[in-house]
Length: 200
Length: 325
Image (tube, rainbow over the protein chains, first blue to last red):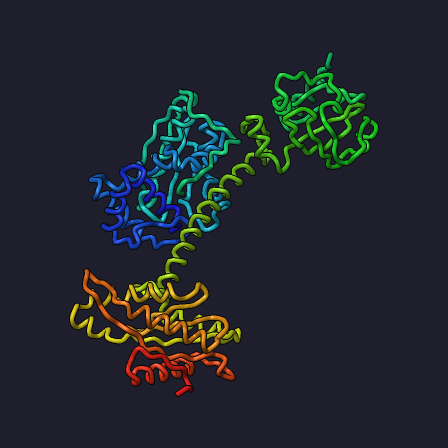
């Protein structure tokens, strides 16, 4: 798996729970040296081991941890670059949703060997979308859930989200758009020089 | 009064090319696209001459509408005359007796977007500008991550190399480092001398005061040798209490002799360990590259060792040149 994804988990723990917690998790997962490099490639099992160790350490199910990771990725100032890149997807939350199909391709434009989960958006009814997430690794659907929830806030949209597991690594997220301009949302300045991707 | 048809045309162009201008036969602006209007906030562009608004830089000498019309379809380089003097690319097309001039930021798009606080909705959905900004940010973030990884790897590499060439107890160079230095010197046919030095009475210190004290004596001895040699010389811990000094440059026998004598004299001054004086001395064997037709590191080390043996046999605290016995 691409180090960017492993590194995201490490930064999430470090920025949310502190460096010591990460070192404990890394030790429990048998990760030596106790860090991921964002531009190297790692065996898939390393991510699973680190996630399992983190879930034990926090006393939280893995799915909940992954949802928190998704929230972290688009809300923490240290990873502002990622939020900005996602905001390029569209001017409104609906446009953003419709850009998700292209997300793996967009990611590959920047980092050619980055394999993101496959995303497929379907319109299931008026103001109702279904997002199919399939990945080699379980848990990514829940990360996507946290990410969507936070991006909806970012756009100021009011949505109701639900996740339905289909198979290991395959989830369907149901998205009901209640109000597309419910709140002000966070500003997005196209030309901001805010891309100091601290750690990702 | 604009006709219905003119209004339709303006709407069409505002949607498809929101950074366009319409000019009349005299070069006066009759309509401004909504995004272009944002670049000159508070300025009434309608009725202004295009030549007052822009400096047309390439092609040069375009000062009249007649000259401008000849450039239909060609790439124009323009710059606002008033600050911010953003550079723009342009292309024009005649439309009846009027001219439509469409503009874009070109490669300076990032500065343009920042200077004028434009948003994605200021560009036509088919315009690649926003995709280009996306790509720029994504690539910068990825490059940044790569750069940081490279810096970390470079630091780790230097640290590993330092360790690999350093004797951890004394901080002197190790035998691996010595092999590199000798190979370099012999390959470049540089003149140098090699002093093989063995501490006398060191075994007694280890036996009577313990290995910890012995280690500290070795550290102090190492420091003395570094102090008495120059930057360009190399001091190597060759084995337990054996050292090799590689002295670069002229190899005059008298000079070498006085260096070796000075070394022995300094090493004979008692070294204090926990207040206890430890007395050591040194025996030295010396070889010079100039004494060989084809200096070979292995041969030179072996000869230096033989000269050292002569010094030891002669009763310690002595120095001998190879071939002088």
